[in-house]
Image (cartoon, helix red, strand yellow):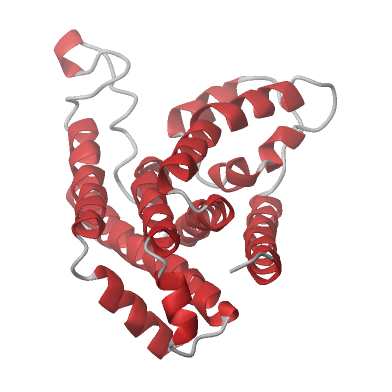
Length: 267
């Protein structure tokens, strides 16, 4: 595994797009949350209008983990696009064939990309922890409750693997970065929301919550929406454990489907 990761690193360490997308994630996550925490971006009026800013009330421990995870789930799109570009470039420049000529098997090529997804997700999670700890310390005044509800940091790791795993599967399936990115953005921003609305509008359990990306999104919901739901009549809901299992299940689907496709398709 270490050798596969080392080779992947050699491929991308001088790739400008890699650093640009990584930089966007690292800069926008704290900058966006800073603006919300300071009331620059607000809902409910804020101090300047004599109201309460409903967005900046969740940056102390332990609520910072859920709030930070929700906003990070928006910016994880940059890393998903990065996975798509890196994988698609293997087909564009025929380097995937060169890997096989140099002695790799098809599965080693595939597993190198899977490892990249896991490592990027892990690094994003560590960064989320550092940024969240800083915001929580500033707003709480201490680190005494640092690990309260810390399991939500793990939820973000699952969410990251889910998003990046879908990007990897699309890249392997389509091979063209532009088309794969377009389909990824179309699905994440429109298609899944429409499908969720249709499925959840029917009587019975909200099965639309178990769509591929929505399953992990349910683990880190928007705090304001959670507050509104708490004021509404109770409806059937599922536990976090159920959504964790669903998320892991979808990640397994991406892996198995990508593996089967790679082994059966002409190289």
